[in-house]
Image: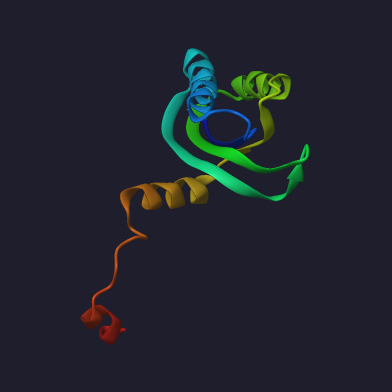
Length: 121
C-alpha cells in the first residue's frame, strides 16, 4: 500500500458541524475501502490565495493515509461530485516525505534549542 496525503477545501457557507460531517464522510469512505488513516489535521476556516467560485475563504482539512491505488480514483470521483468541495489535491508521498511527516508528528521540529547547544555549534 502506498502512502498518500490529501487536502480538501470546503465551501465557507457550511457550518462547523456540517464541515465535520463532510470530513467524516470521506474518512469513512477511506476506511471502508481498506485505507489506514495515519493522521488528520483540521486547519479550519482560512483565507484563499485567490477567489474560487466567488468565495474568499474555505475550510481546509488534511488527511494522511495508506491505501491501495485504486481507492484514490473512487475518492477523487466523490470529491468531484460533491458541490461542498471547492478544491482538493491528493499526492503520493515518497520515502523522504514520509520521513519528514513522521518527524513532524513526533515534534522534532518544535523543540527549542538551549543556549548551550547553540554555542556549541
